[in-house]
Length: 97
Image (cartoon, rainbow, N blue to C red):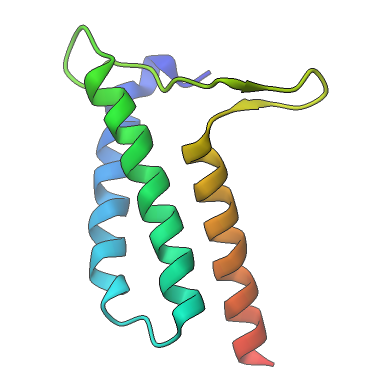
């Protein structure tokens, strides 16, 4: 789906990685650090796929290999990002209450 925007997505991933590296040092709770680490790991995994699977500059595709007939196709990096963001949202909402 996002194959044509590979370089743009790679640049966004680099930005996300940089922001997470800055914020990770200020994580006050272990659950925040775990959530940010999951998003960071997933972003690095997808960026690695884009860099190593390319014929041109950042032109590679992310390899999605988990395929359910009734759901989207994804990979472990996508799961890590999704679960990390979900955990981060949960931690944020629980902290405010």
